[in-house]
Structure formats: C-alpha cells, structure tokens
Length: 209
Image (cartoon, rainbow, N blue to C red):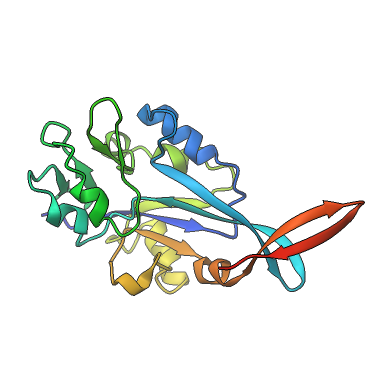
C-alpha cells in the first residue's frame, strides 16, 4: 500500500459556475449525453441582503472506507493501492448497481449501452502520468487544487493546513473523503432564493433549504 493519497480541494469562493469543468470532463472521458462524472449545483442565494449565485461542484468523493467498494460482489469497485483513488474495473462490473445504491453521494451512473457503472476517477489515466485531472486543468479561476494529501509539502496539503483541513460534503456521514471544500458550510447555510426580474425591480422568492 502506497503512502500517497491523491485528493482535490475546491474553493467555492472562486467557483463561478461556468461548468467548464463538466465540459472538459465529458470530452476527456468520453461521457455520454445526460451522464456526468462532475457537475455544478447552482442556486440563487441571499447574504447580507444581496442576492448572488452559489455554486457547489459535485463528483465522486473517493472515500477512504468507500461503501461502494464494500458492497461490490465482484470486486469491480476497488481502491487503487498506489493513489487511494476509487476505481471501477469494467471487465468485472456486472451492472448490479449495488454500488449506486450504497454511494452516499449519488455520484455513480450506469452506461445505458454497456450496463457498466461509471464515475469520476480523478482522471486516473492522466494523474498517474503526472498530469492534472481535466477539470482542474481547465478551471478558469483556479478554484480546484489537486495533489497528494499525505505529502505535507504538496500545494494542496499546505492550503488545507491553512484552512483547518477543509470541509467535507455531508460530514455527518463520517466519511474520510479525498474531496474537500473551502466555504462549503457558509454556502449551504445561505438562504436559497429565486430572483424574479419585473420592470427593472428584483423580487425574491424564498425556497426551502
């Protein structure tokens, strides 16, 4: 087992919701229409009386103790011992979808043609060659940072140290994930609203969180 664990940090204060990451991912990984390895959930939010656009990119969180791996009957879903990345062996996948049910983040999808389950791999074919994941390489605001979480000298580890380790999506689940955020709690705590423009005035319709 390697001491390396590759991970990603997303600074939500820098994400503008342009979806360049999602487009780059689909092109790089040949993702079919209606399917996504990564996407951006966006909504209108209010903070301090101002309405702004909140954006939270989502994808596989690459859990250290991944539920999807433990339920897979063929061991198709597995953790790469060299990188800590959660992968799916297409030759072993039988399309039972147990992993899709077990995933607490609902990030897996099934190929309508092959019946195989797919998801984000942190662009394994790129990162094992020393390249960045396509979503990181294409991010126009540098909101995404990628590197070895176990290397204290890596850029991502230094940034995480500055922000107290970052935040985890649905931390109440108790998962140790390789995907971390900056500003997640503040973003999710903001009141969700719909901005309606009428006659030059903006009316706000509050929505349930």
